[in-house]
Length: 482
Image (cartoon, rainbow, N blue to C red; front, side):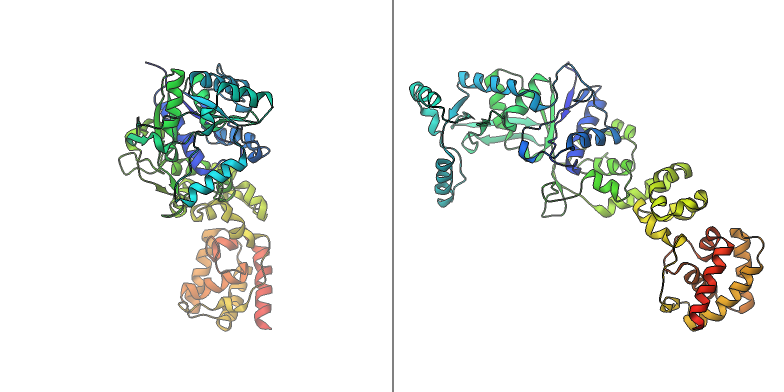
């Protein structure tokens, strides 16, 4: 039995999109589950859309997510080059062979003629397909055109009669009438191959046994199979994946500006959570398990778990899953991941273990850290209306005497640790005959200037320290006294 060989073949036209990363993940999982090889190939023949640096982003993202590849542009291998622009001679050679086999032909039609034909077809309410005009050119006419230096493309010659059927490992048997298949361009006037030619040639020469890609290729796969048969090559097994949707109507799309892997990392999502969630977009393990390591995904992955139905990218579910991953981090691991965000808001100047203990259980995304901890380094100006709390039955007027008593207590406090502070303030609440919230709510407002903090009054007073807490209380009391 042949070794399983899968590939991921992205175009370097921007950051790695979520749908593309899912394709890479499934191809990687299938190869690893079956003891096979996973190959990275860069399809960079669309020069106009290529984005500078995008290749490096692809390499970095796959390595960052743990999707190591056995062969690729930056790791080498026996079937390279692994960048299509470095394989140009192969495509021209194979296109010419197809002409000799009668499976392709030169087309000299001008853009104007093609535009006129398309307009006529659309006016009749028909889907435009090329009319094979140049298929009937005589050898003499072809030589004359070549001698005159007329530009031409090489088109695939698809039979007009009958059907083409193939079996997909997810969707089953797929049948497409040949009349629905266009004589697409294989080689453009500038000598650049289209996907239709390049992916077939490269997949064959690289020994790809299983082609894993999006379901949008289901109806066009027969075109590729005509090429395989013309060359006399074995047709690979096909695994088409359900479309990833942003909602019930719209497909998740890089062209429409939908978020990439790097976008989500920038928003404070962990790479492990992203890979875990992406794995569940169109695949189910067959049980209720939702949290998987990459090793666990490799063991659990099977084609039987792949769905035919579109998968909707649910950001709320991803965020929930990310929170589980954040809370599962060790204190050291959390601090390491969160340090860039701590530095952003100046929280790195405080006791990191204490800050981690305070905020880690309350986070859904790491990018929330600066907003939640900004009060540590800069207390904002705030309106005294913040003291109002209907349920606590407190407001600015009621807060003033409470804050004066709290300040006097904290001034006398010698042990400024969390538990002693809680005991001392609980004693003051009892002494004043108040509810806990009637003292702790205004105290938290007075020392943070914000109604929402990761922890209560004591948890925020402790990291600030006694001196800073008293300074802030003096400022807040002074504001109320005015």
